[in-house]
Length: 293
Picture 1 (tube, rainbow, N blue to C red):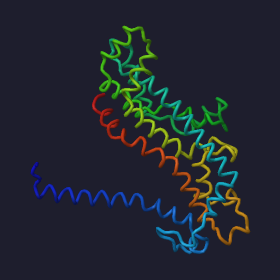
Picture 2 (cartoon, rainbow, N blue to C red):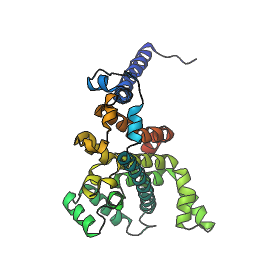
Picture 3 (cartoon, rainbow, N blue to C red):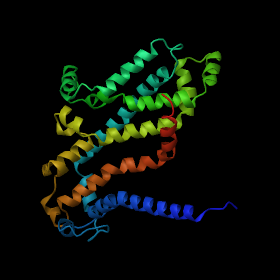
């Protein structure tokens, strides 16, 4: 049996207690929102709810899911996240694969690498980007939410470094000898081996698309085309209660606070469901993607 020193045991206990406390602090706001969403109008409005519902009822969720504006925004958010993640991952994988090559294999690799880094360091800004979107006729289109952020340079560099470090060059050479082209090599060799990096970057991309609200606010001119994050911003931050469509008869058991709490929790639920499946790849993907240029 390996000897464990007393100081190390003390450090482990203190470390576990600290991490546990930090985890509770992260979970507490979500538990509070969940408790408020299941509470009655009076205790929620009086701010009496802490971490357990008072006057338990599910009317807030029935009202939220029955709200056409919310349901439409939820669907828009899902569509934006799915399409945006697929488009971004495809473009970043292709670019990362090409840039993972040496200068001798990909002439001009250094120039393109610096080109991408330059775009990451110097952003054109909101006004030029809006003018471009307008000139391309993408205003009020879902592509206005996807194309401007199709490639995240930082994520692409992480993926490129993973390709350079984690995929043996001999595998690619063997694939070429067997007659595989570049695309076949990427999707049959690189992607299966690079699953930790792919899962990590996909999680980053999904979370960004799901939480992004400002671009929907400036590029969408019709409320019915708002993604969920933009819809929640108008309801919760701008206090536009007209979008809640509350029935006066329901106000006896509901309040704006319970309905907003239910919408917030439903908005956070998709990422909470996806994260556990990708979390085991998270640390490995980040570490291996940060070892080399």
